[in-house]
Length: 124
Image (cartoon, rainbow, N blue to C red):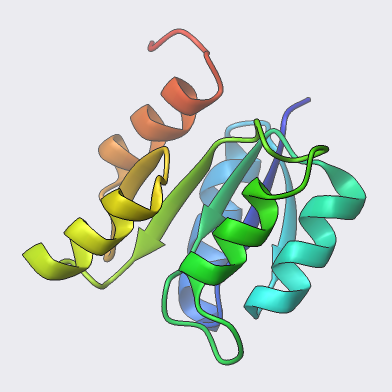
């Protein structure tokens, strides 16, 4: 079973992402801030990380850089999972080197397609 770390400070967004992923047979790990997200990623080495950008302590870009900077997690795909969808935000996220981008609110089809693609799974 593939494990996905969700780093998200909004309770409703966390629940929705968790419920969708679990319904599709994935295990989930959850963190509500960037520092806990980095800690969990380094301890558990998930198959994929969904990273919010606006977080209460360090932002998602800094958390991403810390995950990428560790040899154990350097190859784990990290997808920006954010409501920050302006052209400037997308440019900053792209420049940081994220593997993908998912906007909020969640588009179910796009969400699942992105997760499957990042995990190297076939699309149904």
